[in-house]
Image (spheres, rainbow, N blue to C red):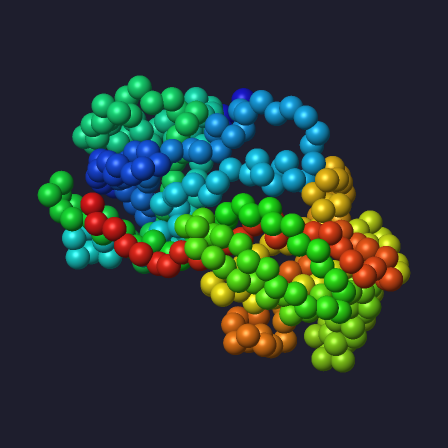
Length: 337
């Protein structure tokens, strides 16, 4: 250890504000600790760390894409996604933030210093938090924009919190056989057991090598990149494509509509059964998405697109696949505590 580390760990604040407000939710207790001012004004929230249990889960059996997708932790509620805090009528605009697991806080001297400073400033640790395992908690640090001085706060003051819109993932695992050049439809029940109709309007084969060359040609024609930049980009794309999709192979693109405002994620059966490849270059191309040129489909609903992760031969006609999961948008909302 060097003394420079002590200088970095010993953070000083111009002022501190203790709030000490606990919010009880179905997912656990959340505690608005307080605020600090200095180079930046920050607000701190202690909340459950759902990924902690996931990380400690003992895993056995084959490590396939299906298993990894199903083992992904559910998106936990977090105040990291808030847009505004109101202390009474005083608005605190959130410009960004981070979430730091507290399990290793014994080595995070800055975090310990914050807790000690809040205790000296009058913070009282609530009984439910006194015996909580730090491995199941995280500290959310929200950056407050255009706030040079800490706001006034008193315990009887109402706190209003505005939450941004977000997306919730639901597993589906609906088997669907795709046929190139043909449309089809299917129905499934959503999380609330309501029927959802899905219309697959088009299944096409995409040549990513040609698509990449076309995109580079458009950049060259528009003069948005120098010849050196274009050559470097072409080499990088070729190296990545060589690992993810051999020349001559194709990706499968799907255009679809749904009777509800949701997005579907399709996977090929072969992809779900396979083990993950170690290639980072391949991972980049597995994130390809299809953006339809039209916004509305033949059924008058929003037209969406998806690209399967597994390359197929150019003469492929049928692809055993699954509508593996869907994403549901949650609207912006606010709560008062």
